Image (cartoon, rainbow, N blue to C red):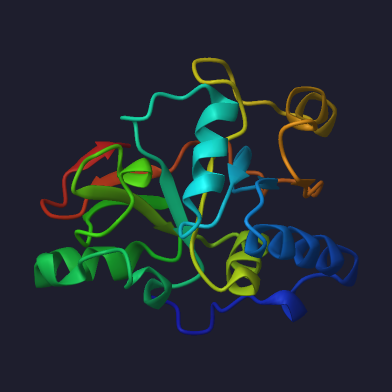
Length: 200
């Protein structure tokens, strides 16, 4: 894993810092935000805030058994929810090779992880992002956040700030209106235990 990739607030353009601070403050207070991600805009909440996670699921009209993707700024940030001890040396090597990056791993969780996150499973989809804005947001929040596409479940992700405001302005607490990173392909999904690619 690149050791010099540690985006924080000061690594962002000054014009973006205030928005990230506002978004992070909203999340720390238990709110829900719209946030740019690597490819599409996402709905985000703190992983430790069940009421905000439930709001996201309700806003999306998403089934409770589907689970959610969690993003973090670094591997250490995931240690409280992910059971890295359950992974083999080869699995850990692959994970460290791909992170930070556009790769999502399905990883065993600790027993106490909220079933709203996992969809009732004993695994969770997690990613250490290489998008500086998203990584800086996680650092400002101080913990991982959920990141699920900003759309009504079953419909296409919304592409513009105008569409996002029209659909979600009354249901979220803040819209971080900066561009996405610009990637056009969904992240590769790996089964962390087996190393099998589930989505290329």
